[in-house]
Image 1 (cartoon, rainbow, N blue to C red):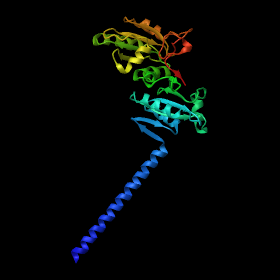
Image 2: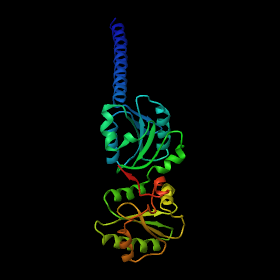
Image 3: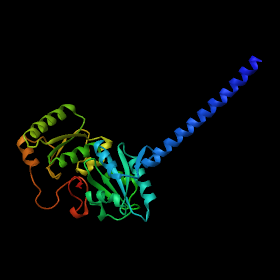
Length: 285
């Protein structure tokens, strides 16, 4: 009799535990879904897509040194999904880029539109922003594929040059080959030159065969070579004010770094039709 009662009690306890576990799982699932919905954040192919509060997303991205592909849409939502898909595909080709959606018709997005002067762009449209909020590219969806669009997403070294520009500093960019002894000599000269400028110039080094920096090297107008070194000098406005394939003296480097481009566009980083394909290192907004 006692055994029978104990057996029934055990069965009853098992049922209660199963019900409690099922209830707990339902609660956890509901809370998790609510969080994702309220945050309006989607993770697809490891790319973060922010569909609400893009202003905070851009602020966070800047803090975390992330590039942003901004998808501009409106209440008509024409081409919105295709634009997001292109942005996501492009971001997936990089290691540190998120996608954010902004609606030109929403009152809560007007501050962001004005801050970055985005009202001038049609909808849909894709804008690429560096962590320092330089516009490095833009395109109407359907006019460019992800493999081409990704070349406008700043690399790590490109972002170093943009950061220097945002701080109104010149930059000495050494695109070096495989000879370490030669690289050291050039780097010492650049550091010495940088220290004589106020504010002190940035010194950026690039391996000529670095695949991740291939697009930036091409923008600088340097033909990659496994052995030779090239110095590209950017003035404080981000304009290429000089280029040397032999090691220059300190005086020449400092003079070149402070040289102002008074007319025309000069050599530069991203291309622009208004400058005949040559402009400064990113458009600051």
